[in-house]
Image (cartoon, rainbow, N blue to C red; front, side):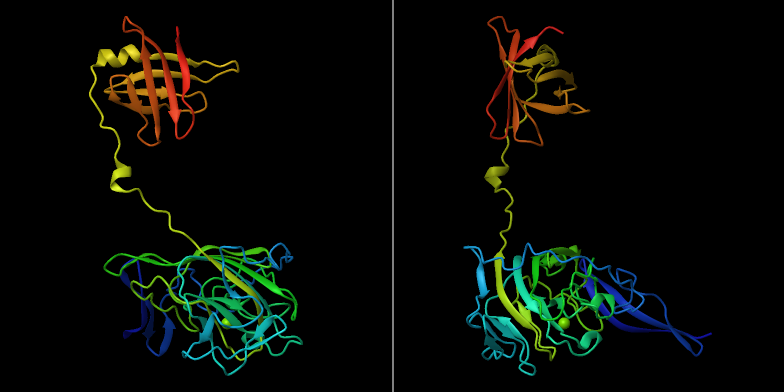
Length: 374
Ligand code: MG
């Protein structure tokens, strides 16, 4: 028996190269040795289950661009767009919408974007024409590389990962929420761009959450790479922005009301903001003296906490938590929570006997508590 392996392609994920597909031949019978996609399904596998039909909802259709949005089409012109070959966008604008003009090629935004929330409305040609992938096909390409499929999926059959709401070739929609040809349909999409390490290795894949006609069709899916007809395309190292692109698949699909909101990045704390008070060492006797029960001074039934010592720190037991929280000393009467911004400031009387404590969490007002006998 002669075994032969032919490498067909490779993609990069998590910084390591993964052989994407291989053919093993045993004798004269070639067969696929394994299916290398993360889902286990071959791309465009007709056996892959089709989603069930879900009733479209109307909450999204007609949502106007909010004041902070980047308006990509307001019904008037294609000024925000250009042709994929660099010239002016050649698609026809009429009646507050524009239509794919077959043969003019894809159009893409002049501006490039990373993380975005996008609203886009589209309508399949009416009357419908063609079958399968040849029926009202276009596409919303995020970063010009990741296609959220636009196609007529209303009582129309094609492979599951190529239906309306599919991340093309990778993830079928969770539901078929398609409306009939000619009806305006709405996409609401959250896109998180891929992240890379300084050396270009993929740190986080691109992620997509999408609603089609108010129905969740993609739930925070991680893209294997760029979407393509026959395989996933490798991430371009270090590239985290790109244009929004619309596909010319030869069908007069209409679009209107397109806007997006650039999403901010949550920043980590600066070095200065990371600074926390220095932990001090206290004698065990000082810690033991603070142990006890403290009750909130309030007309309402107040919070009761129990403080005990464990090794070189104290534990604070709250009534609504099963396990006690560790609090560490930063001064003889000052303790902080290591995980949460907050802490306890104990008070003593003139004889050095603890009388109370004040608990502060985040921006909440200090909650004074008095010590009670157990
Ligand atoms: Mg398409």
